[in-house]
Image (cartoon, helix red, strand yellow):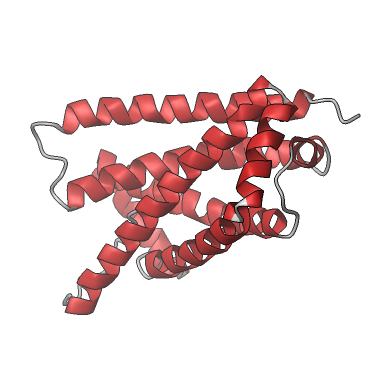
Length: 217
């Protein structure tokens, strides 16, 4: 997922190019995982047994443990590489905000939205990965308890839209940067991206609501 900082230009080195590729590759891997993870979790819509059965198979193959550790590593790499383009200093952040308001350009506001969602995800996804890895295997009852107690329902109501927005904007900006999205196909891809955003949100919110209403007995 691409994040570019509005900052004074500096000469780009070969390392910058490699880091851009690493950022794009890790972002794509995380986006793919997020979609697969949500699809697997959504099996709870067919009942707790459906999710538990799916999880039991994956746990028997050690996919949850190995996959969880790998995703944690990829997440750390992506966050570290992407952070080099985020304005952490107050002066840089103010400059970026002023530019966004001055330009009134969709791509500039998309960058602002991606940076804002990146901060949200950095905090809560880190916690989510840690709690998940320390409480394997995934089970419907465990997830339902988290959602129904401790305020996690409201946290996920914030995190899920932020995640969906971050993924779609990141994929779109990477496509623009690497020439996959052009003037000719931009409108069509943007429309499909909005469909993807809506579909991901609907599925994730339905799954969250199912966990919210799942009996804990």
